[in-house]
Image (cartoon, rainbow, N blue to C red; front, side, top):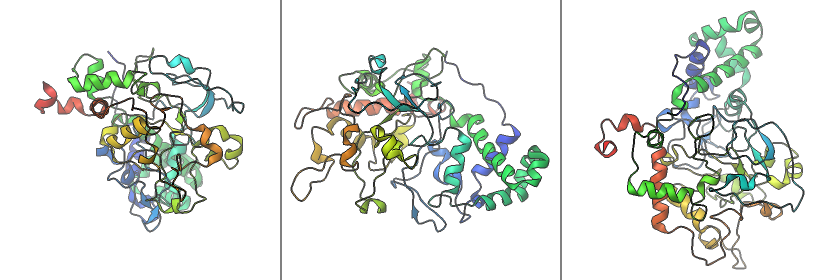
Length: 412
């Protein structure tokens, strides 16, 4: 039996956080709530297939990155750079940068310890790891001028008057009544508590979870996909998207909390990419001098959980892909069919890895399968095998236990 935290009624603080999560009046325009981007019925991910969200005071400003899910963040460790440990949920907070040209051991789904000596970024929230707590995470989009575009003064003022925040004002006590800043901090804490306490943010209710407990069987295609997912010479997906139960008995998160430079193609559908000097370099852009001090990690973005990935319509940090078929094609064919994903320049040459400046292209993962194929080489996964992996990924969608009671397809 897998261990899951027992469901409990929401605390008063989390109840306030829930009300805040759905309150559009907290935004600058009064029209966007947290739930506008993180839709509960879509596992707290985005609706539609737009690469990024349109926000800001007029609802027309383009967000910087694709919207991540808010599910399964309760076990995310703080950001650090240190030895590779693919299953650790309690990584110690260290910062280390490898020497230039140092060796990088390949990651394998069959032997995650093989890369343990690598120094890698890991942990943290957002795609660049710039926040360590859900309280810090809540602060980001609420006050981002391209997202909810709120002001601290407006949010603090609403928390002083809105009816749902009366318990918050009581909990904040004398200091909360005297200090708007303190009341605002308590409000952001309430948002964090809601995400931690509400079980719908981490239900572990997929068919895969039922399979782990012997309550469901994979179909032939799901089983084939599961084996390919774990085959180090095929998908090798489990090298980063760890799918095994740890010593703590907790269900797997399908991420190792680490960061990779996968070289997703530049998304020319985004306004800011038409500036040739613009690059989003992930980890090394989380602080002003990062492109120098964290240069070995430029171009790296967080490895997301694959739970509920089958319900998404945008993938990678810039939302360049819109289906799991496109994602699997990219993994299988990136290096062998470069012109399928990258444009050709005026000289006719393929502009590979075109969303990373040349100075940082050595950071791109070419060592870990399924990458590293020579141009024209046969792909590690056939079209049919890619579809089988997608069939397995569909078993990671939460709510299977509920559907199986009424859907004969799931109850066989």
